[in-house]
Image (cartoon, rainbow, N blue to C red; front, side, top):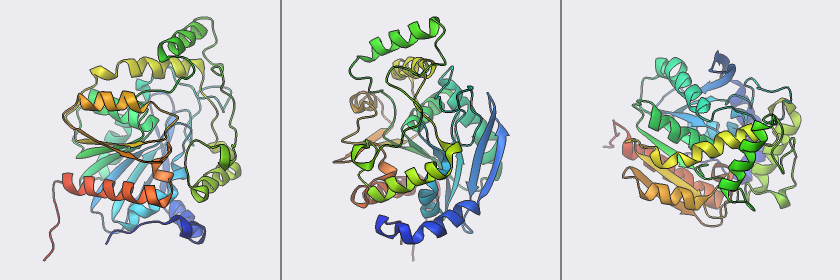
Length: 321
C-alpha cells in the first residue's frame, strides 16, 4: 500500500519529518560556477530512485515532507540546490538576488550532479521529478545530454514565463537593454528582496498548513531565502524559452499543470507538449503553482499519478502472487 502524507497530520509529524531530513547525507560538490549543496535520503529497501529538481528560490530543505513520503515508499531521493539559491553558492554580492548568466548553466550542473554523485550510488532505476524552473532545467537536460533515465515527471514547468502586463518579447528587450547598460545585477522591474506574503495573498498553494511550514522554515533559516530576479536572470530565462521548440528528447515525460497557475504560462507548455510524441499531460482543477505542496484533494491524486507513471516505466515491474 502506498504511504501518503496528509496535511491534517503535518503538525504532528513535523518533528519526525525534520529528524528524517537531518538523518540524510548532506554535502557539497563543485559545480560549473561554484560549490553546490546536495542531499541524499535512502530508505533501507530501495525500489527505485528519484532525482528531485526544485524550482526558483527553493532549497531542497523545503521538500522535507515530500522526501520523507518518498522514502516511506521505498524510493531513494537525490536533490541538489541550484547555483545561486538554497545552500549552494550565491553569485552576487546581494545574496537575495536571483542571478544567472546562461540558463543552460543549471542543466550543466544537473548533469554533473547525476554523473558524479547520483549514478555511482545507483543500483536501481531512476526518475526525474521536477517543479517549475526545475521543469525547464529538466527539459533542457534531457534535450542536450545523452541520458538513461526511465522517465521524467514535471510539475508546473517554467516553459513559458508570465511577464504580464508586457508580452514576453517586450520583457526580453527590456532585460537585454538593461544588461547592455550595465544593470545585469540589478533587480528587474517589480522585483525585490525576499518578502513573506500572507497566505491570503499567495499565488503558490491553497494549503494553509504547507504554506505556513514553508514560510516558517525560511523565517527560521534566513540563509535559505532568495528574492526576485535580476535583469540577467530574466534575459537568460527568456532567451531559453524562445529556444523551446528546438528541444527534443525521446525520454518518457509526463507534465502536470495547475489550472490556476499565475507564475508560468500553461498555454506555451500545452502547445509544445502537443508537438512531442513522448509527452503526456494532465491538468489539476483549482490548483495553484506548487502542485507538490497543494491541498490533499489536489496533491494526493498528483502523487498517485506520479507513482503510477514510475511503475509503468520501470525496467523491472514487481508482480504479486
